[in-house]
Image (cartoon, rainbow, N blue to C red; front, side):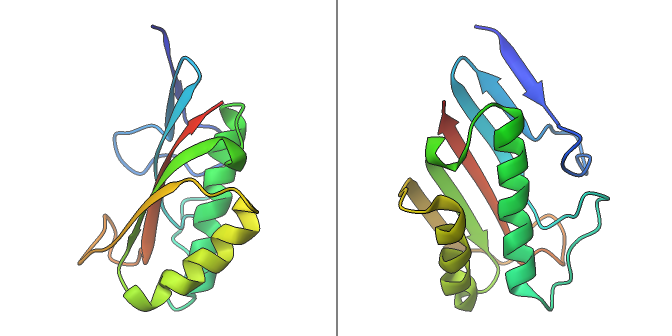
Length: 127
């Protein structure tokens, strides 16, 4: 089956050797999205809501490039550095997901790819 590799211009360039998404048939596999702005700068780690919002905006842009949207997500993986940010994640998630409730795995981790990341979220969508 053919694969489409996506790294759309609407999000930052990948920071290492990866693409933002791979589409196989009608399934979209999104790489972990981090709190980068369009220029690649990491959003201020003293602003967890801003970081969370940036991650969801990046997810939205990659989904859009794949011809999908948040209602197509079947699975989310949420990695957080601080457990006290879970409620903030769910508040922002609700704004993007509305009433849609995909399967979710969430974990608190000691570290992520950049010391300033407070979270990273990946997803699988079926369009």
